Image (cartoon, rainbow over all chains, first blue to last red; front, top):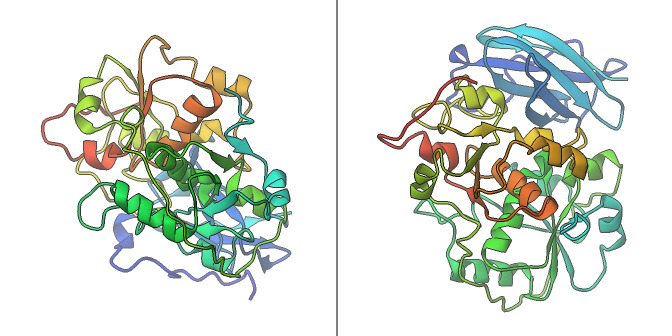
Length: 99
Length: 275
C-alpha cells in the first residue's frame, strides 16, 4: 500500500451527507509508506486542540471540522509531523509526512 | 491529596500486571479498540452498553453496577486501574463512575493507551478470564454528580467550567471534530461558564500536565464557590473533574454528565454564543 493514492470515501459513516460537512482527511506516511496506529490531532487556527483520532491500518484519518484554517499533527512510534490547510465544505485532503 | 494516589505511570502498570488485587480495566470511546489489542490481563468495560441504562437516558442502577462488576471479576477490595484511548476520556469517566458507586480504590494510568503504545509496550489479543465475584456497590454519591436543575440554578452562582473545545463553546461546532456534527438542538454554552478546554490539562502524549501548570490553568475558578464541569456527554468533563478533585484536591466539584446534549436541547433555558 503506498501513500500516493488516497481513498476519498473510506469509511464515511452511513447516512452522513458530506456535502454539509467540512471533512478533513488524509494519510500519515513515512518514506511513502502509510503509518498505522498514529495519533492524529486536529488543531484550530490558534493551535488549540480540537480532536484526536488513530490512523487505520492504511494510515488514514478523518475529522468533521468546520470551514476555516486547521492544522493536523501526527504522533507515532515512527516519528511526528504536521500539515496545515484551509478547509471548505466537502472533503478536504491533508496528508502528513512524519520523520 | 497528591497525584501519586490516583495516578500511576505506564511503567508502574507494566510492573503490576500480575500483582494480586490489582485489576486493569480498559474503557474506550472506540469500544472495539480492546479487540485489536489490550494491556495483558486487562478486562474491558463498554461505556455504551454496560454503563448506560439500555432504555432510559441514565446510568445502570446500583444492582446493575453490582452485577457488572461481579461478572467482570472485580471485587470490593481490588485496586481498579483504568486506562483507555483518546487521552483517557472514557477511562476518566469510568473512574468518576466507580467513585459514584463508592469504589474508593481506583487509579488512572497517566497517558492511558496512547502513552502505552507510544512507549512501545506490549498489547495482547488474549481474552482475560477472571473468576466471577460478588460485588457490593454503594448508593450513588450525589456530591459528585450534577443534574440539570442544579446546573440551571448554578448559573452566575457557582463555577461552571465548560471543558469543550473553543469552537464548541462558541457555537461553531456541535460536537468534537472526530464525530459528525449533530447532537443538541442548539449550539453554544451555559451563560457564565468559563471555557477551559480539557486538552489544556494534558500533554501531547496524553499525560497530565504538572501541578504548577494545572494550578495556573484553573486559576480563574473561585475557590469559595462550588464547581460544576460539563462537556458534551460528560466524558471530557470527567477528565477535568479528575484534575480538579483528584490532582488539585479541590472540594465540591461535580460532573454534569447530561452536559451539552441535554442542556442544549432544554426548552427555555438561557444559552450564550461566542467566545
